[in-house]
Length: 507
Image 1 (cartoon, one colour):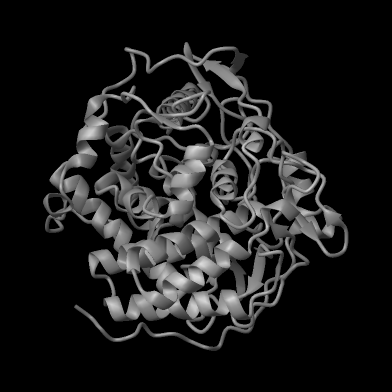
Image 2 (cartoon, helix red, strand yellow):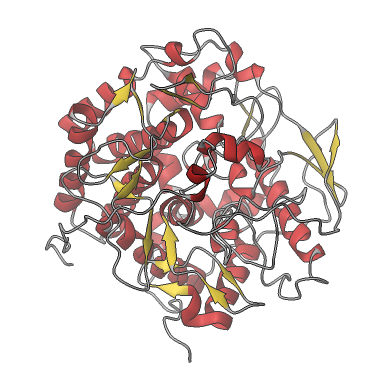
């Protein structure tokens, strides 16, 4: 095992140009709202200089709002176990993704880049607190799997937490969305972000539970308890997206089902500035029907069904409204069927190749997905769309990831794993990986393999208290029993020698 610190270049000086929406006078939140994605709180910064495209008008089956959510349909495919070769594939993928979170950061601050160009030298300094939250969790995975030594992992986490506690600017404990990875300075006049702070907190709490180290535990406790949820919710049960010193609280609220569940649960679990229990009941749970399958959803990409469940373990639990793990199985199956329904226009979409979520494209960053159809869908495939749903549908997702690897080879693969997106119809392959997109893949791959992140994060009393105050109760799993049995296998049994790594060159 390599115990030497990873190489790091301190020559990170070139700042990217402001993204397109700055040039047209829109705030980041206003852009997301305009694109029908007001709930998309963690989208990475847009590729500099690339234009936005108006929403498309493709005809395909649309999801309809309905009034009830039904159990898993008997017609849905039966999820499969992860085989030894599946496990080896995911090991190779996770190890590659870990490299991004370990290398594309300044070790002195621990702030991780929003994205990285993997086809050339990347000197960007734009950091993301959301990517940093995923990165802290990735470090726990890297320690568990021996990608770095425990000493290296622990020291990196300590450096990060010390900087977050002592030096990174905050407002009532909430952090700015974008920060310079070298100095922590606020970038692009970004907002104090409620949901991106929540993503960071999830990573911090995962580190506290995993390392069981006195200083890590103390600083993690202090950072979490400094967050004043009462300031954010002073005059509302529905939390705002954020705040800026120039304009005050942003006008948009987290009022509908999305990735924000983790934010409300963290607020409910606080022992210093807890949200009122009414806040969990205040947001809408809109119900949809697509191809005869009913589920809770939103007018947003697939990642909204994944992010909260990267850390919070919803298996075998439900509140007064839904079994959210079951709901994400349904939403993933619906998304697969939606993509296949587009195959007349985009023939590459099939049972072997599907997945659209907010991502890069040949024409710039897009907020797209469905159903209902969102954004100018053009045949692009986004690996993290399926990869982020690995625990929900392991068999179908592995089929997609293997197809991407074997059919498209080097164009889709980099030293940091899959590129953010590609379009098989036009032969376009992204040059970047995006922190939050790679992050959901490494975390959900680990949950699918061993449930490690779930089991670790849920040791935190804040997580347990949040779910208890939200009214979660144990229930018999509605998902096929194989999903539960898969996670009951010992971690030692699942850690097998690598057999079929993703291809790194065309063969």
